[in-house]
Amino acid sequence: MLLPVLACSICPACLTTYAKVLSVFGVGIGLDSRLHDALMVVAIAASVLLSGWRTLHSRRIWPLAVAVAGAALIVTGHLRPELHVLEWAGIVTLLAGGLFEHFRLRIHRRAEAKAL
Image (cartoon, rainbow, N blue to C red; front, side, top):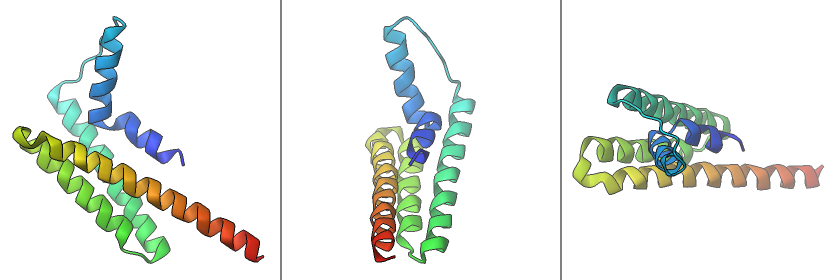
């Protein structure tokens, strides 16, 4: 439940958005390219690792498949600036996959609780 918020807090695209919003209020933050790339690697690795854990736990391949697809879109969009829309598509893919899994688990747990 809290993981999408934590992922967003270290997501380079989100950090860039935060920087723009904060600059409107006169607060400036800056990320150099190396720090931006390192944060992106950490965010993507965390998402793929968590989805791998979910795949092992649920015995369903789709969480890992969605995470890998989203990560591939992010990396492609980041490396090819003319395809920047792919980076946003990857972020949406990761968030949608995480939210879908979260709500699927919530429904599953409620069904198990009613069965008891």
